[in-house]
Length: 78
Image (cartoon, rainbow, N blue to C red; front, side, top):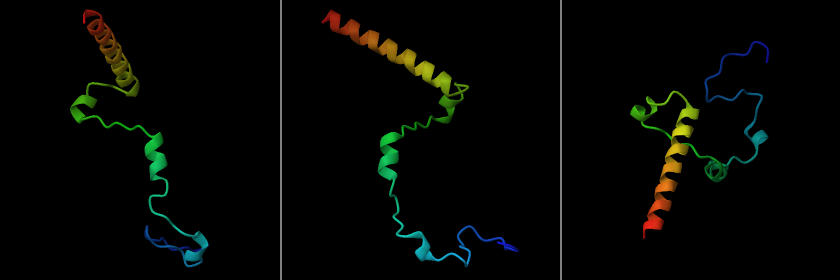
């Protein structure tokens, strides 16, 4: 596109037609993304305690191990 003007974010250049793009479906891949994605957002005050994702993972693994041990101790005492 020679001498193209800057387009606004929602404008489509005149050489394109809507029919060139086929049927659009909103949210077509949402279910697949939700099934394969596991994003957790930490509260800001919690996030300040950890320098990176590896530190968060290490802390959670340690906590899971402690919880697993505590669960096995409870089952023995019953």
